[in-house]
Amino acid sequence: MDFAGLANSSLHDRLARYFSELEQTFARLPSPEGTCADRRLKLAGKTIRLRIAGTALGRVLGPALEHLANEAETATSDLEICCWDGAETGVALPPPPWSAATGIGRTIFPAGGEQFRVSDSSGGETFALLRLDQGRGIFWTRDARRLPTFHHAAPLVEVFQAWGRTAGLTVLHAGCVGDERGGVLLGGRGGAGKSTTALLGLEAGLRYASDDFCLLESGEPPTVHCLFASAKLHRVDLPLFPRLAALAEDPVPDVFDKPVMFLRRAFAAQVVTQLPLRAVVLPRVAAQERSEFARISPAQALREFAPSTLFQLPGEGAAPLQAMAALVRGLPCFRLTLGRRETVAAALRGILDEVA
Amino acid sequence: MSSSFRLNAPDVTCEVFDGEALVVNLRSGAYYSLRETALIIWQMLLEGWPAADIGRRLAPALGLAEAQAVATVEAFVTQLQAEALIVSEPARQPATTAVTWPERIGPPVLDRYSDMEELLKLDPIHEVDVAGWPVQPPTPPKA
Image (cartoon, rainbow over the protein chains, first blue to last red):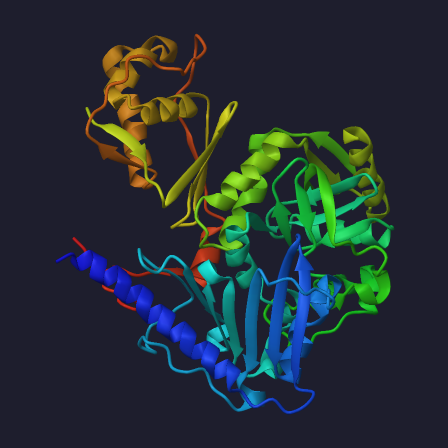
């Protein structure tokens, strides 16, 4: 008897049964009028359906994904996520088929469970189970009113990351801004200045696709898709961005102390759904007058920008590194040394001039 | 040291460019840059060359006697093993190498970056063994 084979099918079956139980729980949720939403989104040519039970949860998941709304879409969904708020519906998450003592964060399953992804975060306040082979998922939160601000800024990012791999898309920890010629990808470790650079570009009139997480579609040219029409800034930096500061809200302050701004409220014309990429840019803060740029090697670019993607959103193996390596091999790479804030947007345009 | 070595996939992944290899340990959060002599040794190891043979071939460029060059390469390979970047396998002696090097090279250096390790500690990836979730693989007893 093949014990390994039994174990594989047993694991798959247990996960499949639990997933089915969650779907049935969602289908039986009480749905008082006005508390449920059924949203159709279009992202990178894919159709996504979000079924949301709970008005508070709708307020968390909605604003950052508003730019993707495509309610007229009738095609079969490539991804369907059923989301519910335990507090508002009064329906708790059915107990999973494992011990509550297990401290799960994200879990990789062995053979038999490859098509499933589990994620829980915020100390058990959220739970997601994806069935990748069927493009379906469940998202539950204990109480949407308590979800920290970063959930409002980047809702379901782990779901998009796991599903994206099955669709040939890679979630990157990177900013992206540009103009009619295309965009530049802004990469680097936390604190390198990529968010600030993206937002300075936005305020200077550039098109905007990301300040933190975006979706890469490899190809010729590679394309960045705007995953979240939001941005975050450290509270101490808000006074430097008065137009953005006017949009800042902090629904549930978290350890990052970064209020969120939903950009379409003031920059609707500049928030784009996608940008073809023309260059990879690594910002670095410097005490100098003017912002300057210079070419760097693909290896240096990858070394500086890949790790934050790999380790902010782990769990997808080598594939994201391969996608990023292909990117830096195919596009010119630059170091952008940041001077006075008034000079940053001009430097970004200068890079686009150079690669056009 | 007569074994051959392979990349410790899937925990470790690597991208090689002209002049540099970026090696990432997805389990630990550490990543590494290998350039110059380190890159030469890395590429020859992954071709299947045993460490001692690499040392003998690089001895003239390193400006060392053969025994010293072999010891230098073996020490570097030990370092790579200690970082869990490579694992040994039965020897598979290749006929030729596609790797080239200049007339003079310096000692191999492994540049290690650990700034991402804390991120993995905050958001760990749990693995399970085939017995099923949530059974975690047994922790080997400490020596």
